Structures are given as C-alpha cells and as structure tokens.
Image (cartoon, rainbow, N blue to C red; front, side):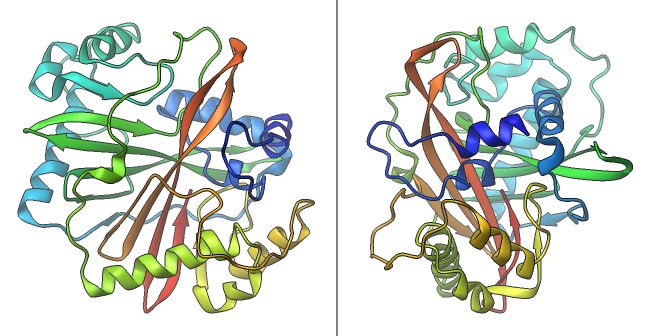
Length: 327
C-alpha cells in the first residue's frame, strides 16, 4: 500500500505537465520477473482480485516483422533467460542503447549485468521459460507483454496477474535499442540520459485505415478520459465485455468508471487538442495500439538528481471498441 501511496502522491517534476496522479501507477511495469514479483506484493491492500490471465495473442505482421519478432525472442531465450552472454554480439549492436535505468547503455554493460545474475544455463532450453502472452512487431519495433502471477496477499487461494513490457528497436539486423518499465533501484549505477533520437522518429510502418481508426480510439481514452476526466466516454469507447489487466484497477468497465470518479484528484476539464503529457511513441499493430510515455522521477540514491522511466499501455481494439488494456 505504501508503494501505491508514494506513486499516487508523486508530483510532476521538471516541465512534465500534470495529469491524474493515478496514471503513475496505471502504467507500472518492471524489467525482469524477479524484480516485478517482489514489487507487486507491495501493492497489498490495493490489489483488485478477479482479474483473468491473458490469453495468448500475436499481432498481424509482415514476413520481415515476423523475422524481427523471432530474432528478439531467440535473443531473450538464449541471452536473457539462459544468460549465454557470449552470444550477445550475435543479437545486440555494440552501441546498444539501454533505457532501463538500472543498466548502463552499451552491449558491454548489458553483458556485465546479466553475468552478475548467475552462471549460464546449460544446455540452453528449447523454449522460453516465461514466453510473452501478447507480442507483435511493427516496422522497426518489436513489443512484448509478459505476465507474472503471484498469490493475493489477503487470500492466498486467489492468484493475481501482473504484466511487464519490453520494447526493442531493430537496426541493421541487430537490436539497437531497448525500453522497459523498470524503476531505478537504490545503489544502481548513476543514470545517464540517452542522447539517441526520440523513438517517434523511427519507422513504425504506415498504418492501414483501420489501424488509424484504432489509434484515434486509443487516444480518446488515454487523453480525453484519463487526462481530462471525461468518464462519460467510457460507455462508448470500452466494450461491455472489456477486460482490464492491471491488478490495481477494477476488472470491468463499470468498476473502472467508479474508480476514476472516486479518485481524490479527479477533475472534469474541457478537452483540448493537445495532450497534457503526450506519449513519446505511439503506433498500431493490427488491433493493438502501443503507447509509451517518459516520466521523470527522483533518483532513490540521490534525491537531487532525476531519472527517466518509461510507462506503457497496450490496448486491443475490435469493432471500434477497446476490448482489453495491459498497463
């Protein structure tokens, strides 16, 4: 509960525009399952039981995009899960750009980090130990949603499902850049902001007409409802069978409406064309809309410094209604 309170009460910093404080925990995710499961249990009383596990889903892709996805999953199985860091050069560019605030940028730093987690697994498993539940690739990007389960603290007979997110950019046949939702851990190396071009500059491939419509629906929800407080739009935007996968939120549409309205910082405002806090990346992949935000936080090791953390929302849209959200 304390963790939720700290997120809810965190003011905006720098020149980041303020919007509902609860969006700080709407998009909570961390980099590796080990860290995630430890963090989720801290939600305690704030968890909402009754969420269902995600069903396996794969976005539509071109042959080139399917190749990119397979390449990233191969890297994840061999280098990340099995810790065969001697294979890292086959997958990651030497000047690999890392946005996880706990790992310095560069392939060499990545190798050092995963070596520190333990010896390599022999032999390399044929399958991923924890494959993503939702996955896709669009243009230069590959995106993955992982699901992790743990026991509900108030009732161990119930399971709670939480998600983590990873986004990769492929360039010249190698993984060039990586984002996830990790918080900075106390004692981790000093955060050095990336000087790479913003992710929105990279190719996500031209969207189809239906994908453009899906993006517009996602923006109406994320901007008009969450930033400007127009919960009356939920009835139109969310399917009556809508599924929320964030375990700190009610599982269905009606519960979500009441939840937003009851928040102490809820305020209905006139909708403006601009975002209060615009995503740094947004693209569509068939029925899925992928959005990513940058947010600034105080460095836990040095409160005089800040670091950037990424937040994600994946929305599945069908028949012009939002059917599922992972965040």
